[in-house]
Amino acid sequence: MIRKSLMIMLFLLWQSAHASTTTDLQGLVTQGETLNGELAAFSFAQEGSCSELGTLNTSVKEYIASIQMVYTHIPSPYSVTVDDLDSLDSLAALALQMAQNSFRISTGLQTSGSCYERSNFELLTAAMLRLSDDIGTMADRILEMADRILVMADNIGIMADRILITQQLQNANVRLTQESVLQTQNNMIALSDALMPEIYDATLADLITKSQALADAMAATTLSETTMDVQLQQLEVNASRLMISTKNLYEWAAKNNQLAVMEPSDDTLTMFGDLSQIHQGMGDSLQTFAAAIESLSDQTDSAVLKAAIANMLKLSYDVGTMSNRIMEMSDKIIVMADNIGIMTDRIRQTQELQQGSFETMFHSMFSAQSAMITLFQSMNP
Image 1: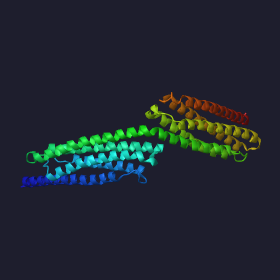
Image 2: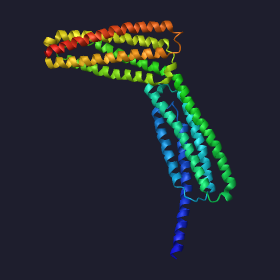
Image 3: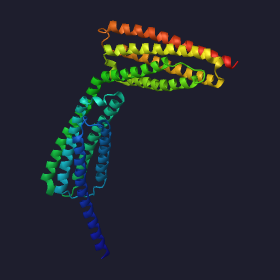
Image 4: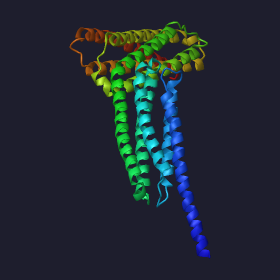
């Protein structure tokens, strides 16, 4: 009696596991249809599309996790049903549609001017490649799950013809899915190659705007014996932020292989020349500040004076670091350019302008630093 009850219980558990797998597969189809709908509806023309792509990435990863969960709970042995095979067919078709939508999204990026700012484009490119890779992983997991179900099936003889159809459909869809994923990845590489110079110039133009604003603020500042420490601190805070932006652009330029074949345009060379002249103006302001601090030192409280000297040295360091990075960045791009022969005269003009401007700037900076160090030493004999 106990043995009979145990057999009934095991049968019910086995039946429940099979029913659960069928339901789980149907749930994956529903979840996949929703996700595919979100991919199909995605457009870079929509506001906030750059950040929305990250949300899609998260959804795809969650879907992969759901597939893995169903995969690990498939019972053995398993009696595959027509509904199961229908679900597997639908999942294979959905994987292909998602891969095709991913390719469509990557081509749509070409018209996404709002995402061309350097930091946005970097994040967007990474997100697009992750999305493509994740969809490829998802397709692999669906195929693995289908194989597991079919291998563990204990009724292959009865369902042979229907199983064969599913396998043929799976194989065809996997091939097409892989092709779409590869097309997406190639599309992103080609787009990155084409847009890198444009993005670089746009970021360089933004750096010029911010540098000019700092230079103007420095030129418009007249130090006071009572507030010189605060005045210089405010300028140094802005200079420090700008220095970080300059270093980030330099590091980005240095690590991107695409710049190894970049053709610097007239605009690129003009902007490098403009930056050198802006920094020459900053150097002039540093000398003016140093002279003002020296002349006001006898009338200034010692605490205010020491703080002003410290902020002045920090400000000159920031300006000097920015100038160094700009020179290194322009040299790197010019040396790696593949159109030096065509742009020889223009490149030489830019280099001569930069050399003269930066030599003047560094002379002013070192002079101002020496004056501040000498003044500080006189305060602490």
